[in-house]
Image 1: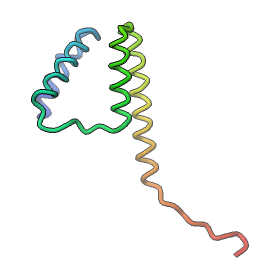
Image 2: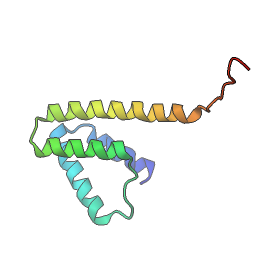
Image 3: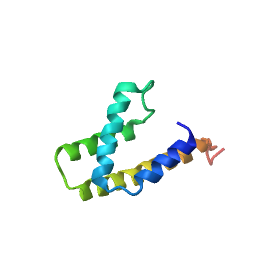
Length: 100
């Protein structure tokens, strides 16, 4: 999807409450299951987050609880991505024994 289309969609979504947002998410997931050419690239953490959210919604938990939990998981995902990026930039340094 091109950037202009993404921005237009995001502008329209920003004004919606969580309940309508989740209805739209359901519809997008339905459309993806029917028409997507490729699967969404998502890591293990994204799959866990989706499963937690789906379970909470199926349990009919209040939207505020779901939103709060998803906010925390999103923050954790950002930290996880940042730490992965930082760890991959470090190289192992072998130390010579101090007695050498």
